[in-house]
Length: 343
Image 1 (cartoon, rainbow, N blue to C red):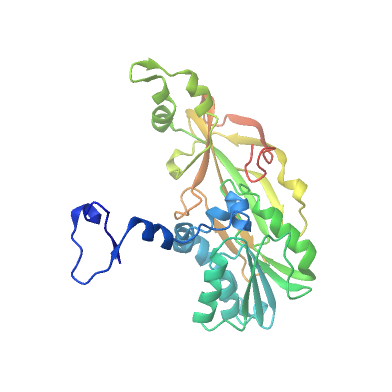
Image 2 (image 1 turned 30 degrees about the horizontal axis):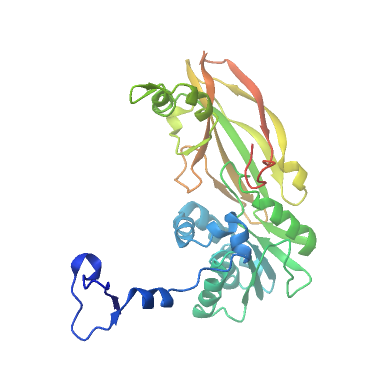
């Protein structure tokens, strides 16, 4: 049906109503417009969950061959670990990890998902013949009840930018402590955060120098604020002017929520004489239960991932000679204003 305004002008830039097509007044159009989502629903109470109701985000993650391919390799390449097991997926999204586990022979797969996409995942499970194996529970991990007391394996793609951004790992650890059997498996079960210093004069000038003068006005006070904002971008391996260092390592079987706020020392050895403009961070995760272990890396020089790299600019460029050591501290904590953000 087409809405035609009262003044007789046609909708869609003057397109005339087709013969036999019903005319709809503005009032009728308004009455038929669907009601907005319930503001009290779980996904609307938390912008984080609401953002994951957008299909574009899931498309980006599913298209990420490094991300999704690593889970496929870890799960379907180790069917003997999944056959007859009960599997829990924390933050299951469209359910792809549940489907991998079901295909690997799991007897039961439960996905916990707080966003609206959980309803679509149920349809996908039925469509692909896993309706009797895969179940989705709508809600927050910390609030839902599962149809089982314990699970054999927890799979989760919990990693955020800078590894720990969005704090989804907190929910995985909660699920581990509440539902994972004593000898249960975690996919992945180890994670490491790395950093190196880079030469990045051109982009630093484009990003920071832009604020020197804007349309004839002095905007330089903005530079101090802009330089504090992390940048998510792909860094070419040729920009790395130092060796890398691991600043945080997590054993998911043993770590606690308190371990996710940390202060770590780094020491980076310069590989050449160059200017150092920023620190770049990336991560890798390991599926140690696999034989051989599967490692997913987001390092510079590796294939593109939707996580990209996290760049933190130094206030002033540092001149380094080959063999010089750049050392310092990196401090990470959840934001007091919003625990899904990090300072």
